Length: 616
Image 1 (cartoon, rainbow, N blue to C red):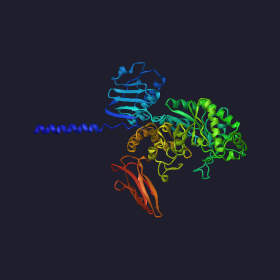
Image 2: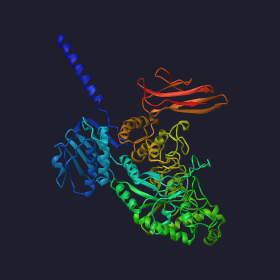
Image 3: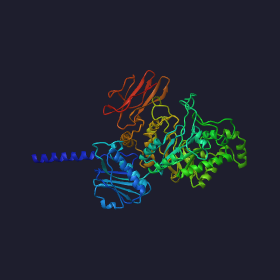
Image 4: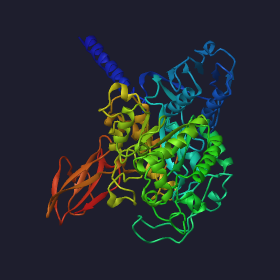
């Protein structure tokens, strides 16, 4: 009996150990989520003795593998020997990293980690690059440190990943006109995009408030057009100005350097040259491009929409053709963004030339004149071997034959374009507009509007359900938009863009159904990586969002939410700081004018974020 008892106890202990080991087999936390990830037992350790075998001595592949060594050198203090022109399969069980061309689709990759080594399979350089971005996220977060981290075991959990993107176009936009940002910051911006497998950088280069790209044939555009004499303080309605000139532009040499830098990270830069509206900076330099209805034109000093737009006359088209000639020579992107949004028709309605042109062409109105303007420029750009993409308003008056649409005015424009069999990138405001508040406006710096919370961005489905299966294939991607009226510094851009851009990146890459709990669990781990990279992202992930809803004159209904998984919200109504013993938020409740809602998030009895409050 005693022997049997010991055998039973031993069996129970072994089972407990096995169960514990199984519980510790945590799935790697990767953002964006791979198409398929299977966790297996064990890990592979990367140290200075591990070689990398590449099946072809392709310069692009070798450069891409070099990104792995760059990060290892920074964080681990060593790099790996890279060997090419040697069949990697001979070294499968030798504790090596093998990089194999498996003929996969563009951007797809397979990543297999076993205790005996790592195998990366690809079909193009982009696949290798994305495999390495995932590999970085499998390693300890210290891999993202900028200095050597002592005592870290560089272990990769064993797993099998098969991965490819949902959409070919996964974009991030940055407006450099309302505020100017230098090249080092743009490179950092592109690095963060690439880490999240975002592959299109939409570079907004011309506006009413400044012209930012050198055009050699028209030097005034940057000599004069880069500058505005001052900038409005606060919103466009304040009427108060800072009295300080603001300017900046990119030389063509700088642009080429950035294009090359981005291309090495498999990011295509799409330049935007606004036509026919948002053109006041150009008109201030060359007034003959306007309808000539005013005595003086100057670069805008406040935000908003301006009536001064390009006049559709031959001098204007010659100017624009010259500009696009230099842009096309500079940027290898197949797509050229021509804007097309927010073009007031007031000047055209008063302009004798425009009215005569409408009659001559047999057009119905100024909207059809804009369509004719866009179509004329499209033909010119198409003749140069490029395609145009523009905002929803290029649909007004009839869409140019080959144009792609970037749908920002909700979904309607994207739906209409897809139904007409035009390719569409979904970037609807406010769902994908990163200049909107991401928390309670009462406790956030000035922004365009909102709020648009992380969860809102994550849960938005970019393929409208109203489309037929045939029409849905015309939705080719997504883009997050960063307009910088209220983002004067790089730090402010990072705060507004991240971590919400993680949600948009996931929508662009991942085919899996939406899973908010799974996403936030992975994101909380991922934020540690962004910390290591020094990204100044918004930390509202750990803070409660307090919302007041209309009720009576004397009361409001309160709802609260939190992004961080497994967190509970504790609150008080007397203005005191919440503790782990304060009231637990479980359902909406009403407050009166004398009560202040003060709340904080707790996990395991410990406060994990900041205290937030809201008054009636």
